[in-house]
Length: 323
Image 1 (cartoon, helix red, strand yellow):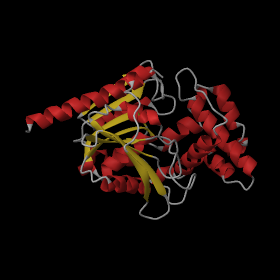
Image 2 (cartoon, one colour; image 1 turned 90 degrees about the vertical axis):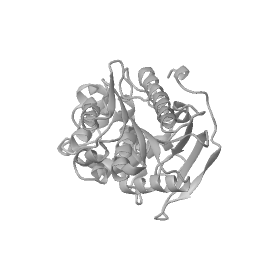
Image 3 (cartoon, one colour; image 1 turned 135 degrees about the vertical axis):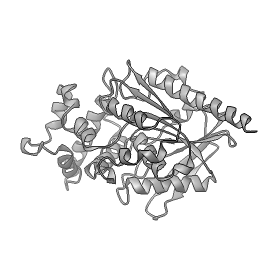
Image 4 (cartoon, one colour; image 1 turned 45 degrees about the vertical axis):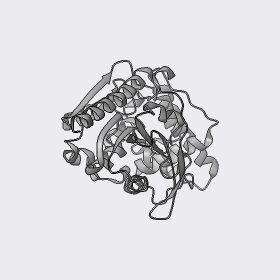
């Protein structure tokens, strides 16, 4: 990761926990940057990945009010790994809860991978709250998208690592790998659960970077959170009907957007970014020929920061024009 593209490290001036409206979770949130700046919400991926301190550095702290939060069951949110009421729709409610708590009328969103899915779903349901959207590594969460990564597609690109991942699944069960991994992750034997979570997390991690990802097997908390929560969502088709985003994207066709996607992304297919851009006429699409999935690859990082900078310039130019 080339940190020269990022803004200097900053610390939040506000952080805490918000009890969810259903009373089942406490969501960690933080605010940094300029208290009077452009409100922007960073939506992390996974689901289950959580935020990190470098996420704040994608934005100019002099002009942005930067809001981060950890989604249900992961990061600093409590309880860890809880799947109770952990659905796309409850996450959308949590985002609205954060917005109302911070007394924000409209805000911009930046979401990558699963974060792009959640950003689009939130925008479709609350278009009146949107200033702008920046999407990275667009994931539409269709059956085809899920099969590509976890069953048939990415395996042709990384056959050796896929063999290790698929070895936990009996041949007669390989027509539905996600469901079998769901069974393993909910087994009564903790050793079976942990092994399944590790192999799921490892397979995804290997595919993140263009030249091969690193997998930190010792980070059992992070690996378990992302594996369990991802599988929970994907087993349930992310809790929305097939093709939900494209069926409803007309509701946000007026929103301006930057769409950034690695042309060699093995996790989220570049076609997803292309089709979203075709349905959002006020968007710009960057397909980066030297990048895979990772947000922290040099080209993607450069384009993300450029997008946040350019939106700030446009925002203040329009503000000056309108008095």
